[in-house]
Image (tube, rainbow, N blue to C red; front, side):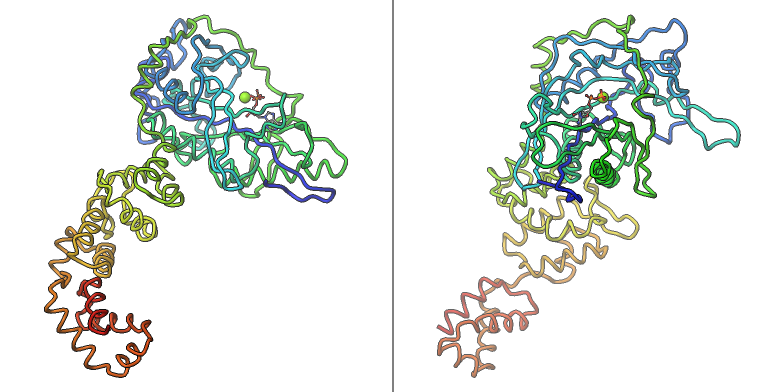
Amino acid sequence: MFTIKGKTGTWEIVIGLETHIEVLSNSKIFSGASADYNPSVAPNTQVSMVDAAMPGMLPVLNEYCVDQAIKFGLGINAEISHRSKFARKQYFYPDLPQGYQISQPAEEPPIVGRGWVEIMGDDGNPKKILIERAHMEQDAAKNKHDMHPTKSFVDLNRSGVMLLEIVTFLDTKNPENNSYITSPDEAERYLRQIREIARALGVSKANMEEGSMRADVNVSVRPVGEKTFRTRTETKNMVSFKFIKAAIEYEARRQIEIYENGGTVSQDTMRYHPDDNITTVMRSKENALDYRYFPDPDLLPLIITDERVERIRKTMPELPSATRVRYIEKFGLSEYDATRLTETVDISHWYDAAVDGKAERAKPIANWMISELFAHPENYDIENQKSGVVDGMRIITPNDLAELVDMIASAEINGKQAKEIFIKMLDGESGTPHEIADKFGMKQITDTGAIETAVDEVIKNNPAQVEQYKSGKTGLLGFFVGNVMKATSGKANPAVVNEMLTKKLG
Ligand code: ADP
Ligand code: MG
């Protein structure tokens, strides 16, 4: 368990995350305007009357968005509500033209109910993180304060794009139920898990750098062994794993210090300042916003039939957790290798494309990826699996790697030559591994006649070592193999060399 040593004792951290992911769909959740609001799109060009909150305009629910929420719910093993509602969450801010955000009511079941995901806990064992709910809501517009010295602008392109907010569960009635996040590392692993599930399902790009995933971080601390939960603070709008971890740690230490000095923590909303790595109070509980939630009279309750859920369940692609099990059980990979190759959906897609269903490739490809390719991230396009040369850098594709391991398997080249071809590709050599092997004359010598000549030569030139070998120093075999390989410029098939030497020296 992750703990922090204070002056008076040892403390544990309790963490709850509210994660927002931007949902992929062609149009917005309540209008027909395009939901693609990327920065290259001119401001205020993808805005319907609904998104601009023109009087009298009525929202129409996008059923594809609903399917996306259901899909994600199934991906986190959650109950899907047969009936949920939309509510207005009221606050005033220029990025919210309606004066309220359409969300789902906090005190009633949202579309996605109780679920869970599995992460690796700090003790290295699988750990379930319970999820309380995931609900649908609209994103706000974007305020722009840096375009004019005295004016601010609003870009409504993002207004009304669907968000899914996923909230982790804390079993306050049963504090011994430890299926919640208890360390900065677990928080990161949980968020990565959510990201990969969303990506595998095509529900969201869930990319923190691009802003399609953000999190509010709730933190409290308690002395190890204490049975109840203490007051938490909430740090808003975090958009990087690194800062989330730093903010949790800072906030936990700040709270511990307050308790150890005899104070109490108040339930404040905090802001994190990355430059100074500190949190400060954004608003205190007394000034908490009252959102005056009320049912949205323009939207009917959302009714979801079992048939609809089952129809979506049938279209679910393999989730990262299942991919991992498949690699271990079907391909015989180690836990470690399977975990590395399922760190992101892009990596496992790349790996699957290289293996291409051929089980004999599974282990060699895994080894090459983990021990060679991962060291050169600039040399493979994990997302698009494209080939070609980018900035003078050769992009290695799944096909390239597949061809390379097949050439080793069929004894066309040996491992050393494969490594040379690989390095040539890294250095920008174009062509397939076959073409590179041809160009540089790197065919392996399997012809026993040619190898025998080299073996005889080496034995003849090293009588002292032969004597020692024969008197029991069999460790010298490597010496002979090395010399034969040198004599054949590394081209001999090492298996053949080994066998022949053992026989002749025997
Ligand atoms: P709010 O409605 O104020 O956002 P929620 O009940 O929705 O509060 O909880 C928000 C998040 O905070 C949830 O993930 C929840 O598990 C977490 N949380 C609640 N109480 C605590 C606590 N004492 N310590 C840490 N996290 C907490
Ligand atoms: Mg909340």
